[in-house]
Each structure stands twice: as structure tokens, then as C-alpha cells.
Length: 115
Image (tube, rainbow, N blue to C red; front, side, top):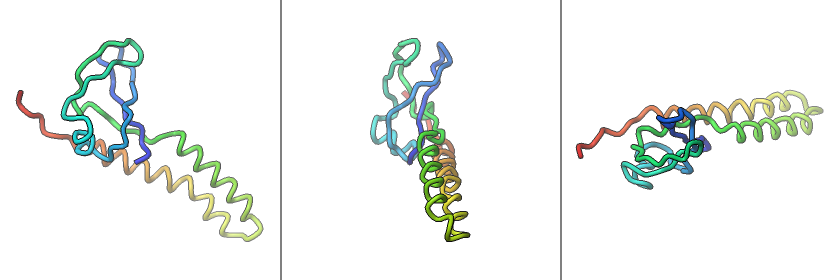
């Protein structure tokens, strides 16, 4: 959840995002099938992509938003004391959750079916 999914084009070696909310490759297969067709966002070459070629990374935008929320919470709770430090840990916890989610997605690959 909250990770960016992407595939790497074999022609231009650029990453193209895959718009999905799938938690793991099994969910992705249920949503789009074992193979799906997509065009590279850079060289525009269409190709068939197996779900095992999709990878996940933590979403930077969500981490930045969590950092902003953490800074606002620190400012609002500064006069209370130690609670401000706990609020400062919020972006770290969000990032760790994203790393764990990406590792879960990348850690399991579907067995290749025979054509």
C-alpha cells in the first residue's frame, strides 16, 4: 500500500509507472491477469509484461507529506515536551511501513505458467 509500482523497459532502460493499488503480485494478477500490455512512457514501444516484471518502491510524495505533518505536529506540541519527539517519529514510521510494503510486493514472484 502506498508504494509506486514500475516496470523497466528493455529497449530504453527507463522506468514506467504501473497504476495499481495491488498489495502483492497475486492481487496484481487478479486485477490485470498474468500478462498485460503496456507502452513505455519514454520510447512508446508496446510490449507484453508479466506481473513478475513489476517492482515496487516507497512513494516519495507520501513520505514528504508525512514529514510535513510531523513538522507541524512538532511545532504544535513543542511546549508539551517529549510528545513532540514522538510526533517527529511519524515520518520515519510511515517510511518504514512503505519499505515493508515494497519488500512484501517484491519478495514474492508468481510461478511462470507454460504457454
